[in-house]
Image 1 (cartoon, one colour):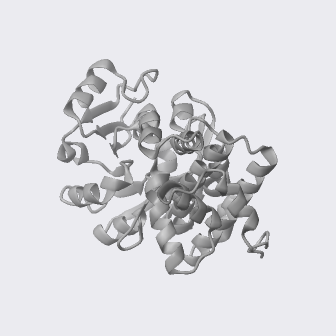
Image 2 (cartoon, one colour; image 1 turned 90 degrees about the horizontal axis):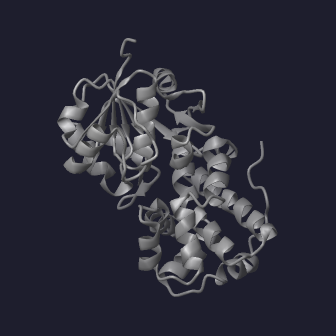
Image 3 (cartoon, one colour; image 1 turned 30 degrees about the vertical axis):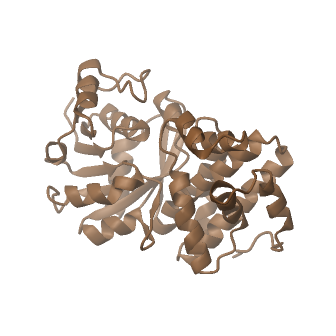
Length: 336
């Protein structure tokens, strides 16, 4: 079969690996950028990423490298799946090698501060290329196991949407479209915080009714914040919002859920993070959202409670008490 596209995936972590394999399985030539040369050598020689998905046999169409320029060469579409902490640095680096016609897709669920920026803001500010955001209920382990999953590609360019669908769709991976880039991106970043909260609540055995309360109030807070930032609240009823929130807030496969569960067992933050072993983006996002909500007077009692538990010595059991005692009692705020 003929190779269809040259695809670059930046980030050889859990999600980057499964994205690379999805694209390669559709007969695209995929270059996978990883930070460690030894990891690249193992992926190429063993045909698997033993650091994250030892059970997943990778397509022979994947070539891993720690040389960013080499990975970028000739790529018509680039998926950036690095941790948010290095996202801006990587974007600055790829700008040196980027073809103006190339499409750039952010696959990282995070937000930057000082000043407040989404990751698509970084792409728009640093590059002149067409961009998109990929987000949804995408637990990487399940995708690696070829279980059914769906995601959303958001872009203002229809060609970007169609390209991503063509490259990444499979019998097990369904891709939906949206033009609300801001909404899809904020949904993906914000739900990580609430997954920490839900993991904590599950650890405390608060009960199913209380978890239903936390989930719906999480959705209310997410959409309230997003509307303040210009997003469409209806986006949060879809796959990138409710879909991702439910999957991440109820699954032990979620790193953020695991982190919250550990904190609920009265582990120290350092020990809870060590137990998880991988980056939990919700922890980084928490401080950014907390500061931004205070700055713009956005009512987010769950964010406030979690921040106080992690950084101000409040107790995990204060979470439900704070929610019940909060004077805000309107259920659904956005109606059309």
